[in-house]
Image 1 (cartoon, rainbow, N blue to C red):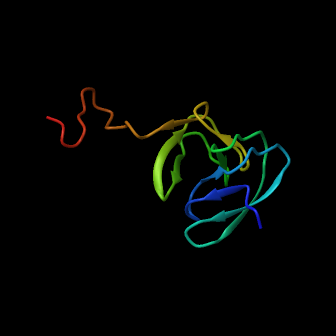
Image 2 (image 1 turned 120 degrees about the vertical axis):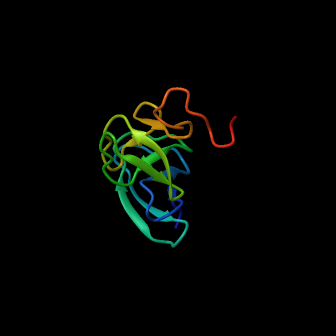
Length: 107
């Protein structure tokens, strides 16, 4: 079976499209860690390499990918929706809420 999107872990909130996804497509998405599958109906176009929601993601939800926190939803997305910079903010540079907070190892 050719999977159109893959999740890194079965507990992830998002999967990565391995080809362009079209609204209305019914997908079976495989998790790479344990082979479990998710069924998702695509709600909007998702380009190759971008993320599709595996479950409803409310505003403020911390998104998990690779089993790690990758971002916080700034806008709710339904299962099958497109997750990208317009509705999620990265946690990559979230070093704290204190002005002037420093990264670990920074003087």
